Image (tube, rainbow, N blue to C red; front, side):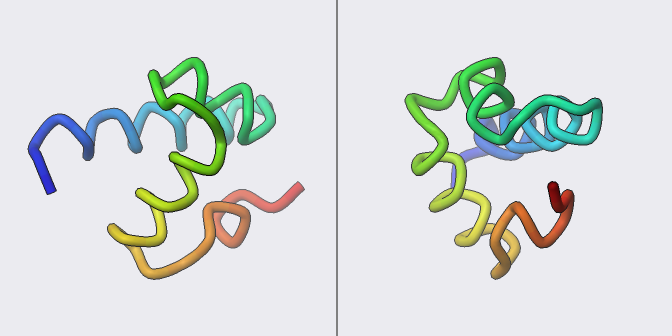
Length: 55
């Protein structure tokens, strides 16, 4: 995992916690789509992003 991925995931989490959908958060943080964010998140934390900030 590169050092640039963690801040991007952190940004996506902040966007989601601020009320944006995971798709919006993924795009705003620079991910190609929400699937890309989900795969990266699972690889880093072992859980689905929705488990952290449920809707």
